[in-house]
Structures are given as C-alpha cells and as structure tokens.
Image (cartoon, rainbow, N blue to C red; front, side):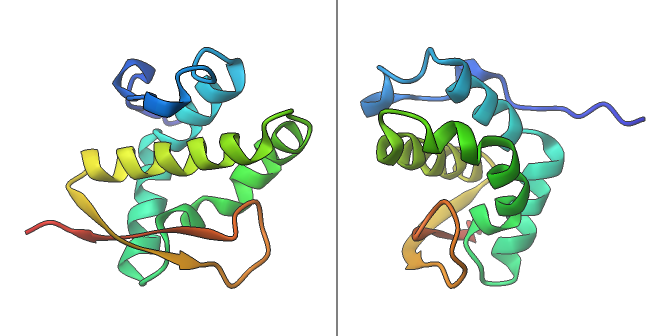
Amino acid sequence: MTISQHIPFSAYQAGAFSDLVNTSLAQDMWYFLSTSENINRMKEATAKGKSAIEGVMGELQNLFGLKISRSEDIERIKIMCLNMSKQIMEMQGYEHIACVKLAEESLFTTAGLFKKNK
C-alpha cells in the first residue's frame, strides 16, 4: 500500500473563505485535493486541455457531493473548493489562464484552466 503525500492544510490561504476554513468539510476537501495522486490527476487533466478539477471530479463528487448539497452555503463551498484547486495548481508551478464552462453536469458549472509556467 502506498502512503499518499499531501500539502499541509496550513498552506491554504483562505482569504474570503476564512469563515469556512475551520470546518471539517473544508479540511477534508483540502486533504483530498492536495494528495500527490490527485495533484497528478489535476495535472493530467490540464495536459489534456481540461480544467484541473475535472481530473478529480468523479471522486470529489462521490466523497463530498452530498455534504456540499446539504450545506447552508452551497455556492461558497463550491467556490472555495475551486479556490483550493487553484492554489494547489499554482503551488505546482501552473498559472490560471481562464475559466471555462464544463461540458458534463457536475458539482461545478465552470472551473479554471491552467498552463505550466516556463
């Protein structure tokens, strides 16, 4: 069994989401997004010209979709999740270049596109 490495939660700059950052949902989402396996999935999606979040969308939806949909602040939590993925990709040397409408119906209607900095 491989032990996954992840970026510590303390690396997340919550900014406008500081009121949500101390919730177990926020911490669990960060832990999920920041594992080395999921970072690689986001990079692979980016390499294919897709939004980074599409690389982890199925599992993200399975693990957190119900919790997010039951939240009182659904839209802000979804935006926080996208913000987390953006920060993680930037930590990996990627630059946010655009927001795109997602083709598949999922938790998100739009998400960020990235390119690798040279």
